[in-house]
Length: 299
Image 1 (tube, one colour):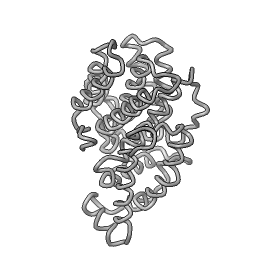
Image 2: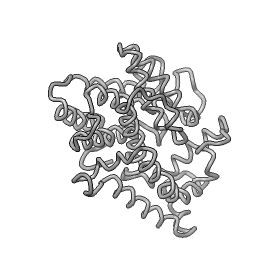
Image 3: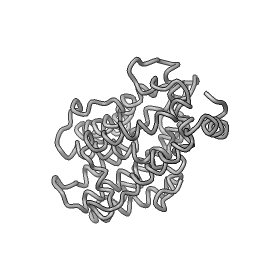
Image 4: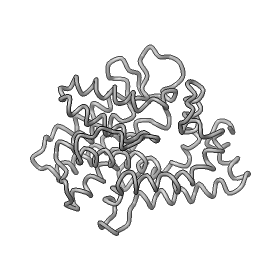
């Protein structure tokens, strides 16, 4: 999908923008870092890493990761241009990028796992992602402290995560983690096909619930694809907006152009998506027609 002229279906296109942004911020930085990080992520999600299969979840696919990565880098770049304290360092930009690229590796299945899709791990994917990241980064020679920082950032993506319980080492690590959590939400919800992919998201939740029913998790909040469609506008208005502003410290505002009070492409695009979704759920006939078009069957 196109997102401000960059196709998030094209890992190379996203990597080019991220590399250009990185070099503008850190002209003396490691020119091999961004291509290397994207190469690692591509290997992980296409079945080229260790004994893991290629990703087989249709909503939380590699494009979802690329959407988040692009958004996060734009947040960090906006914050860098705003010249606020503590200043973003090259080290934490790099760790943040690794964290967003690896934040959904918990959906990946081992090669001998032939049952269902990685969606069955929805309720545990955050902890699985932190474990996956630790193994990969240790193999790449990262220090224990750097690995812990990446894990803490990934923990910010848990929908029901208690952010105050995450053992951040310092303020900058926390800020980058909040940028990651923010980008994970904005990147997917601002996608051109977000509304069309919501029935697929429900399928992932249903598989997760059927495999290991959690008693207090987002995966068990919806009784059908139709129910998820109807509840998503309130999810945006009453949960995500509050989380972005209160829990994640409003770092989404670094996307405003010009900063601090200009237009925000991501927020505007999400509002457009929510308006479009409200039209879909305006009446039973609209909803049924939509699900017949974008879903194999009406749930």
